[in-house]
Length: 536
Ligand code: CAO
Image (cartoon, rainbow, N blue to C red; front, side):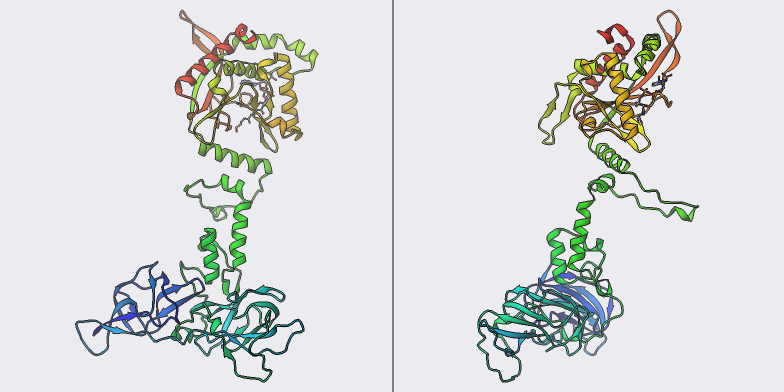
């Protein structure tokens, strides 16, 4: 047994290449050619294979380190001869020299000066064919020297092939999925200036010193591997080339979330772009889904328990879900409960039945509640405020518009009764009838649902003894109304039957203190219970 330190091989001239993955750990046993570390520059990624078999004793690097040739990677205990105490240093098998894009002699002298030059695949460190996974240029494109023209990939590495010349792409000779190797012609480029190598005589490809590729070749042992049947993932366990990784980093995209549509499910640049586009197009769904850092609720396959069907949500239902989630997450809400004595109010309302029929206006408890809330808002202006996103001020409104939740077949709508404090009972009743009718018939305009200061959600006709409505932000509060019922109420001398209306007031505690809420609720209950005060 002997300990040896495995070092970074010749990286084809590249230096300070980032470690993006270390697939082995101390204690692992590795075979020759097993990947020890994945390196990635801005132009190429590569697996560094082991040249020894044995047990990993210690990892000498970490993800994010920048490595150059000769840097120690790990210490390995091999089964080979020699039991020296000091670990021997083992140079990795050097890869072939850096690929040098080959530029053929100009095939013909173009009419407008300059030359047409054929760009060949440079020495990629292997005689094997590798896949063209991206063709980054098209006929007619103007390119600069150094621009990426192709992305190649073997099962162990991917690299970008930069153009050794600048000019206009005359023709693209390969397509995605093609197999190429060192020397394969890939594009012809019409260069702006006449080439210095204008001899028409066929000559061996001459490397251009100015055209050293930024791409780093794969280590030879790696590149010699036959393409694996399964896609190789690299980096954070995804299958993508360096250009795609760089794009993902720039856009802040987690490649683990992106579905690859390239060969063998490789992630392409367009996959990353589509991912971002889709994310931007789904604000409503995002708002309805998890908030910042809130774990998503996983979808469950209910069909394993019984028959199911998927029901598409209406647009209103989707918007309601998004708004409810937004309001629930943004408003620190408190709900306060009380009962209002509506015995007098109901007697008065019923006394107006004949007139109501004559006017053709349905008079329910709702206009009384809108009127009472308008008065309570006027007396407690802190309830007529909205939070400013700066967190440094609030908006005090000097008008009183009351929103009213309406249950419609298409979903929940909240039309707004304008200037509720300036209207009488009949006018309010007429507004409420009109707005509720329009909501149910789908005829509300956007303007009729805007500008609310406070909302009422009445489930009184349906039943229930109490509920906690969600504040319709940026409003400050909402009143929930449940079903009225006759209750025994102690009047100081005896229990008397009174019609009591359960109320629940949910308010934004950022804007409203408990004391403010107590004052508002007491005022509201008093106004509802005292018809004269309400009508004053
Ligand atoms: N207690 C007992 N009875 C009540 C009541 C209450 N709190 N509120 C209304 N009623 C009665 C009405 O008096 C009426 O009876 P009469 O015809 O005998 O007078 C009956 O219930 C039906 O009233 P209504 O619902 O037609 O009219 P409304 O003015 O009370 O309410 C509206 C109008 C639009 C608010 C209501 O129809 C509605 O859509 N409510 C649902 C709101 C909602 O969905 N909120 C939840 C939002 S959050 O999920």
